[in-house]
Length: 381
Length: 218
Image 1 (tube, each protein chain N blue to C red):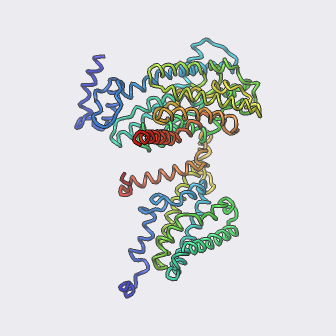
Image 2 (image 1 turned 90 degrees about the horizontal axis):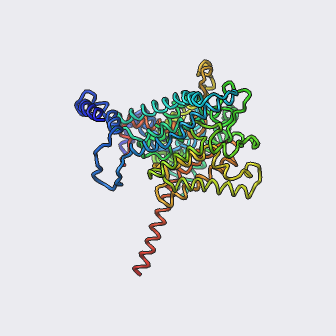
């Protein structure tokens, strides 16, 4: 470890003002602060005192994503070999999925960080930490067969129009990872629509529809068991199938205090309540689907744990978080059941509520001000 | 006023030329004044309707500007808005009829948006802000300039949307067939209105990057 510190210290003068690589300062800075916690302290203005900085926070989220990521890799292989009727050992399946996902991850980080560094250079600020997690989230929420150029385009779109035009990480109103998926979803619907996209290569005999796709066309007998969906032995986007692995990630996030339990809990609650409401109505088969199915199907859990809780785009007030999360859950299920064009509603629900989060916060704060004014009046009069 | 009357101003004096040039760049109705956005989103999925729409707006704005400018001294201020609306509506109906007669298919595509030229803020804005206080000739130039500024943005947006969204320009295929064989696909999002907004945003971005004076302070 000492050697690394020495090496960085030795290189530092080259990147400072007047050095050889002065222009690449932001890049050096990002590497240095990634390896070592910087010793700078905020000097003025209101700020939150916390022992860890953004980069350390992001690394914890990264670790929380790993169980779902590794399971996703294995699942890609599992689904593939299932479709061609073979059952090789664990590592063969894992390795197959690993090779499928690796290019997507490389493209996602390459394009995203490239653009981030470019903007950091032009605007003369440090490379922000935000993309560290976003770059891994994007490969996890696209189907494994997504063409790489589409991934690159979606990442570029999300980083430039989702983040940089608003002023970079922390200023974005929409979750960049979800924006990338929304871009793919609307721009190239045939590659991501939720049926037959999946293990399509040489899988003639096997119907590769995801549970979401099946439910959409009313093919309810085809749905896997709740246990399978909970464990994640189902076709779906790369990293979102296993509710169990996502919950492990959620526990890591909650135990370290980085994820927000209010949002997670209320998203699940909202989805469940909406499912129950539909059960009461029960006009068609989809509405009769048991409420807990909704929580393990599709990207619901992934969205609830990793997407809705994004601290930048979520509501900031405590009361606001309850409202925000609950509405995400409700709208996600609502879109699933009622809109035949969109098999999966979680993405759209979260993006919609991202837009509304500042409004919710505004009214929560206004209500608080009003309440306290009233109290003040009661005391003084 | 008296000095102006004595020496007749040349038709294309520097001042008059500025009336045409400014709306094309530094005072563009769409990218700087942010007017007329709605129709810019609606009719720019293809290049042809965008061009027809631009021409319609040029005609409507130029002629209404001249008419209002001619009427301006006899116009009671209280009813001026109504009179302006009547003039615009008349022009819009005329243009609509001409389109229906000669380019029926495009007229079909534009559907209500020709009729909605009447609500285009640029037109009312120019009548109020310019034609009410200027002579017919400058008013005419001002109308042409502003409508051209509007049209240029429409055409740029439509060009990119059609090229990336449908792979065509003016309905002719531009993206070679070989690209599709390699797995290239048309971007379905470009056809949808949000992308028109983002394209306009990019134009604004590029324009302000080149002309720093346009950047607002905040």
